[in-house]
Length: 498
Image (cartoon, rainbow, N blue to C red; front, side):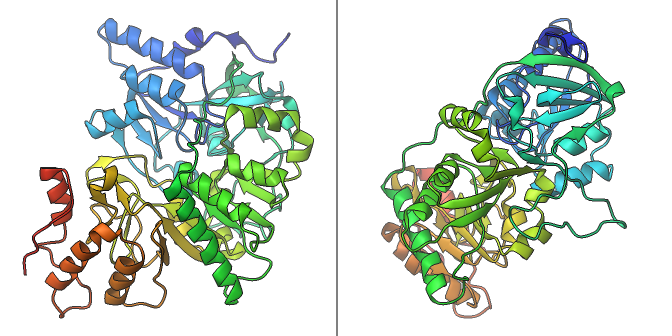
C-alpha cells in the first residue's frame, strides 16, 4: 500500500525528538491517543540516558492517555513537565515525588492557553488518525481533545495511522476552533446534536514529517461491576432527578446530562437508563462510556455529544461494525467546545461528577489524597460544575473499609468551592444545599450523606466550633480527622478541642 508521506518505524520516529522539546499528543483518555511513537521516544530516551545525555520532553494532551504513552515515557524518565490531566500510576508516582512537574488545568482552557502562547511553542504534534490525504486532510479516530489546536501550532507533525480504525468513521467528528479575543463570537451550539464545523482537520502538508503505522485498539480499562454502594448512589441520583421533574424544576422533556469518568459514573448512568420515570435524554459531556453506548442502542439516549469514545474493546468493535448507526447518535468535538462554559449554561446541562472527599460546607476535593498527593487532576469537572443547570457531586460515604470518612470537617484540598456545589449524594442519601446558609449546609450534609459511623464524630466537630461566626469552622480541629488517620490509620474517635 502506498502512503502520501514517508513511513517510519516507531524507533526511527522516536529518534527525531530532541531534549527540551514540547510535544502535543492526541488523545482524551486512551481514546484516540498516540500509541506507538511514544514507545519509540521512550527507547530513544533510554539510549540517550545510557550515553550520559539528558533527554526529557514536555507533554501536552487532551486528558489522560494509555500506558504506552504516559506510562512508557514516565518509566523511561523522559518527561520534564506534563499537563493537563493523567491517570497513570507510574507517572503519578513521578509527579508526587517531584520528578515530573505537573500543572492541573481546567480542560476547556488548554487549547486557548496554547493559542495565547501561555505554554510556549509546540515543537511536535503526534496524532492518531484513521486517514490522511496528501493535501493534509486528517480524519481522527475515537477522540478530538486538543488535537486541532495542537496540529495548527506544531512546527512538525507525525501521524500515527491506525489501520484498526475504519476510515468510515469520517463524519463522526465536528471540528471547530473559536476565534481568540477580541474577535471571538458565540459558539453556535444551540442543541446537543448541532454540528458547527468540519469533519476533518486540515494541516499544512509541509509540516508532516512522517507516518507511523499503528494497528491497535484503544487501551481503555474494563469497568468494575456495580457493587451495592455504587448501585445505591446511582439510584439516589436518579430518584433526585425524578423528584426535580415532579416539582417542576426540571422540564418534563428533561435536560442534557454530563457525567464524569469511571466506575461510579458508569453505574449511575446505567441507573438513569433503568429508571422508568426518566425519559429519553441527551448527553452533553466529555466522555462517552460503555453505559452511554448501551443506552444509545436501547433508545434511552437519543444523542451523545462528547470529545472521546472511551469504551472497552468489545464495545469499540461493535461501534466500528455499526458506524452508520452510531454516527446518527454520536458527535465528537474538540474539548474546548465539549466543555465550553457558554454552551453548558445555554443548554442547561446537569453535571454529575465524583469527589474524593467533601466537607460539611459542600467544598469538594476531587484531585488529592490527604491534601498532598495528586490522584488524577481536576479534568473537566470545573468546566461543568460552575456552569451547570444543577451541579451534583457523588462519592461513597466511607473508604478504606470504613477507616476513612469521605465527609470531613474541611477538605484537605479544594477544587470546587461551596459556591459551585448544589447537590451532594452518597449511598446514604441526598443533601440539597440550595438556598442554605453554612450552618444549615453542615447539618444537611451530616444528616443526609455521612455514614452512620461518623455522624456523631462530625456533630462533635460542629459543637466544637461554637455558635459565633458565619461559617462553623475551627482551625484547631479542622484537620483532626485527617491527622488521626495519618497517625493511627482511622478517622474514628477524634478528641475535639472546645
